[in-house]
Length: 556
Picture 1 (tube, rainbow, N blue to C red):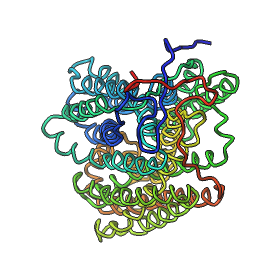
Picture 2 (cartoon, helix red, strand yellow; picture 1 turned 30 degrees about the horizontal axis):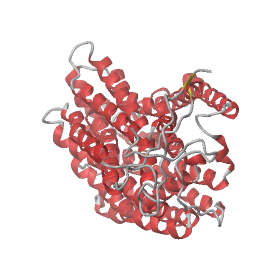
Picture 3 (tube, helix red, strand yellow; picture 1 turned 60 degrees about the horizontal axis):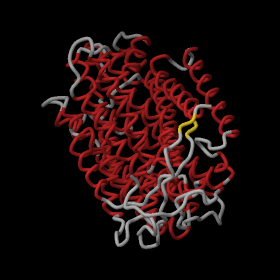
Picture 4 (cartoon, rainbow, N blue to C red; picture 1 turned 30 degrees about the vertical axis):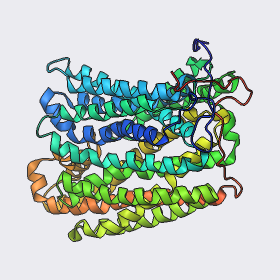
């Protein structure tokens, strides 16, 4: 089995209750957890802004570079596929080579990919260069995110972890809503600016992390390259299959072939991890029932979290006829609730553990999304009636999300924070891809039913109703206008009112499904062990003493 081994052991420090590093910093040097948090938020915000800003401007990019529909689709999906395939490897590398080092490497990769995308030349090479740049961005994300959470954990004592994670997730998550706003401003000037906007953020993040004194976290271990290959292949195939369902359909043999191959690769991955002396993912962590329940909570909450961006954006632009900038205000209300509740959930988690946090968050989220579903069909009232429901829905997710992520990382074996954080992100991406595939199909089916009668009154056919639904459901962009690119102008003009109302009725079912996902969190909370609270300081290093304490002011 191919293995990769760091050149030499490097000592590891242990965070103290005051946030210092007992033996991982130079004498008299204090760690700077606030500066570290700022640097990590800046670094990860590049990725969250990028997710929506690129999707929004995809039609502009395609027109400017003369890309085919397939070319721009691959340019968008290359980022997601590369990240999904490399997350688990990135998490393991961060535990082995050091969290600070891997955050810097990941940020540098993301910056490099952004610059490549911004400098894409015209002509026949455009698609290939853009896809390569997006893949590099995805690789940077896979290296950056697990190491960011790991660095946060070794810099902040256990008593402050949940609060720091709440700030981290709420601010970086809210930056997702900034993407459409920036895109609407920058794209008319020059679409290349949407990639170059990452440069100041990335440089500021690197500067903050370079000067912050953080604990040393390198530890000698082997990298299971065979396991990384199987894990990467399995996640790539599964996510790719879910992304193609909109275009190919659920009955397409290619979809299920990819799913079968992906599952087979993941089964083989689990088998290799059970035998490996130093596995990429220590499966013993799943013996902890509380860890498994927290993992399931991340997956189900992500089904609602990832889907709300797309469906809310299309609903605002199509059914409410809002411009992109005003449609983004819907996401603002959602994230206002998320940010406000995140700190409250963190405090509750520190006092009582995850059980009650999941129950309260699930109830809030189910009520909020249920109210959104009930009000979404009344398009005459505009967006005002959605404000309070969206705040409540966002509060439900914000209340539990960072707490569940903190609980998972707290339960990592031998303080492998990067390894577990990579699993958290993997579950988030897989849950999001699955929910988008299922809910897009559900909304499309309902829309066909709603439009068939309207088309008949104009002499249209069921096939034309399917054409409109496919144009709205088979998407690579979050922009409602781009979804209508394939709709014949004559038909769109004749049935615009029916189309707006038809989509509003159909998308209500997606919000009902999101409410159901949040309801599952209540069940998971009730199953969570009452004595499952864990909030102790955890030394950075293996429990068997293979890593010794030492001196140094960073992990280089």
